[in-house]
Image (cartoon, rainbow, N blue to C red; front, side):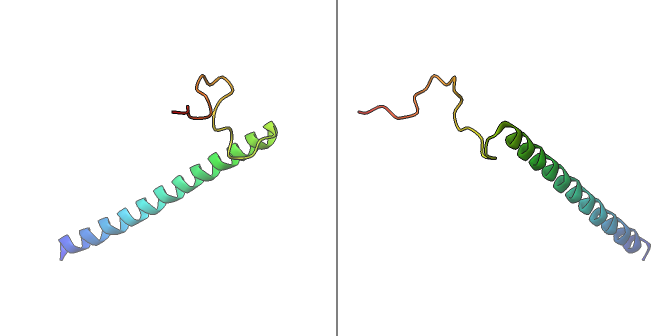
Length: 65
């Protein structure tokens, strides 16, 4: 019976720990998204950003065969 109680306590602890980790991950993602939106708004760009940089050496279009 003692081992079963320890197992129950450990299982509850793991559930609490995983819930905490999930909340931390969601908070980080929300903070990252808010920062990206603020940066985009201050730069006058949409949230998607540029696909290719202005200094890119590659052409935007594929070469014809």
